[in-house]
Image 1: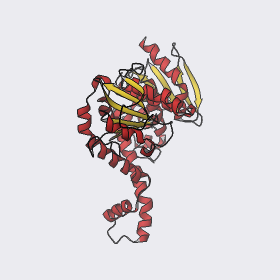
Image 2: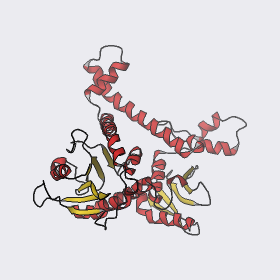
Image 3: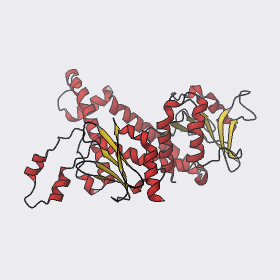
Image 4: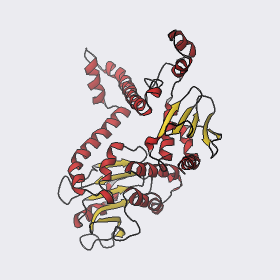
Length: 371
């Protein structure tokens, strides 16, 4: 499995199980150890690769331990400190990471709650752990641009020098992205003033600023949705691209609208395609199905094909290999799953997130096609 597949598989596991995790120890067993073992590729049961409850010989408080030390080339290279899933990550609660960082050969420290993984190094001062991470991996919203850098910390591809060299750029790009995300969610006064001054030709009075407090976040939301839809159009292919909404609030097209605008020589097949409208919920459902079955097959083999009545998810874009059907264009939504005879069973669901409750059935279907 690729690093992407391994990360998405763990992300699915965390999403499904985190509500049942109540302690720090359970977080380690359910999520942190699989991250170390499955994602990073270290043998968690081999003390020459993973040392649990690691204690340094000198320089730290007596009896103080780090949850895990990862060994590569006979040297401790990565320190891992874990907290309970859902608990906010605060460095002041992990002072042992700072102390151990100074007295070991480790150049990378990881603070995690099993869902969010913060990676630190010593960019600001040698042998002193930075106060801010250079990489943040959030399994609830995986940033795929970070995965090539994460791959450099895996056992099979360990490249510490490359990671350290890229850490400075990663650190500031990550901080800028998080700052932008905050501004998009809750724009600051400076952010609002900046855009108002760019588009409003007169003086930006308090009354004008109040108006832009509504306009700026609305414009930001529409811009982001347009960018997401543009990428989805590319990912789903030309056929689906024509049916995706252009913005977050598209004007719903009706059969009469399309028919009136259709050219005289339009075929029934072309007309049918023009009537298909792919919704945001269908896109979300498709991405969830892909995240689930990536444990069985490479994600690029999972294709989408929308129709007027349902949104189909296929293996290898083959109609004879249906993985699921999303019946979302009705008051009661259904997830269609298939058995070994390709017979469909429609399961009622309330939202795309409910697809996770049927993960085993989806994986079983894909496994059958591959057998």
